[in-house]
Image (cartoon, rainbow, N blue to C red):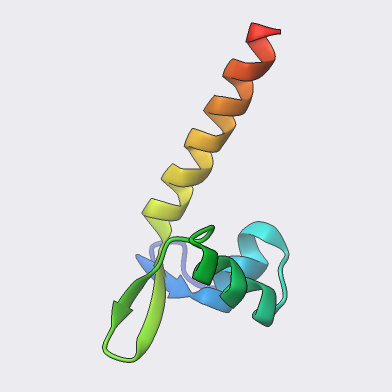
Length: 69
């Protein structure tokens, strides 16, 4: 596992680490916008903080919906 202080990680690494996705599934999720990405030249990287903020918001929305029931 990479250093926890890394600011960006590869698309397959993000998919595997956060969603248990295959390499192909990770790139498909990134293409759909389910995994946030940035492009540096020909490379596609996942900003870790943006991905974790996105996940935090999803958890908050889920919690808010559960409380509304």
